[in-house]
Image (cartoon, rainbow, N blue to C red; front, side):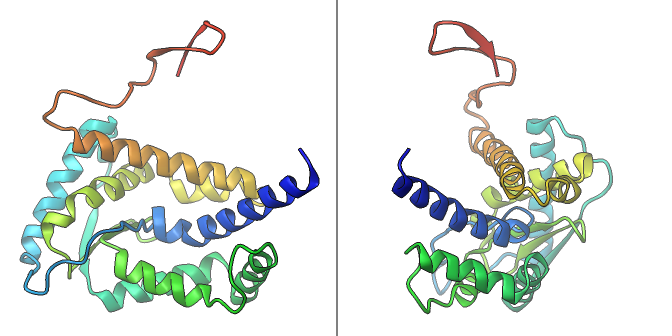
Length: 230
């Protein structure tokens, strides 16, 4: 691997790591979901309907993941302003302004961001607009965006409630922090949590089809023709 490619790889890893750690508390621990904004005449369902839907999805995710609900999960609807305040608070707790500035300048130096780009404001605005629901492991509470139609919420609920179940069994915040100060290890653990929630969400979407993700323990063929177990 030549020096130029090493620099490119390092720069990409730096940007992805910065964004992953910046969004760790917001994206897993507050996962965003890119969705088309609802029509102007679309109205959210009553609060009770949101809570009932979350309870239903939680039960389904418990069955899909095999993780039982250990204690009742607190759930609440939050306004756009409350979600924005949470995003900002999470960003400041993950890294202070000086650390985020250093990450941004490093990304600029590698040509991964245009100079003068306001990454903080960009991420706050994007997450505030895109968030449909999030699980906060510190409060151990599931937040539901009150401005979004219920029909758009269930897929996000499946993802976030997987994190809630994992947290009750494995304490995901402590597990992530245990990797520090090894940023590669922390990013790897972040990827494990995101991957598991994504796989569970896909299984949720496949409910009723009789199909599922590749089960753990199913043998697969290796490149050399040997069999190994996932």
